[in-house]
Length: 96
Image (cartoon, rainbow, N blue to C red; front, side):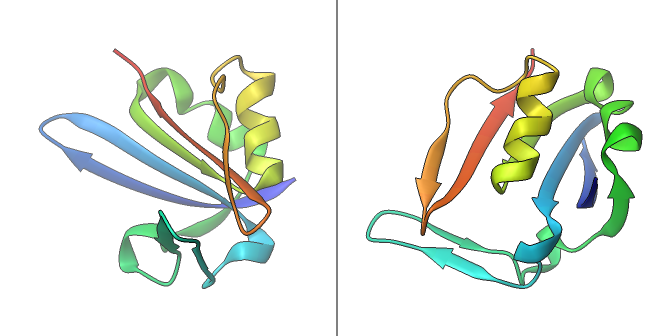
């Protein structure tokens, strides 16, 4: 399965955003949170989940946005707590 992957580095740390393809360029919001996937921060390339998983060990922070990306994170024992906005699941993971 493919996802949109954006990678950012800061202070030697790798930050990943993994977004389900069908959510590209969407804005998700409710009364408490807004996730604007049109922002440059979330723009990236279409990548296979298997390729993404090779980056998990290097990542300091990973955002999983979308039901399929959450499943990818769960398959690798990275996602424990899941939130939801507009019936779309998301999770933020920080690895120390």
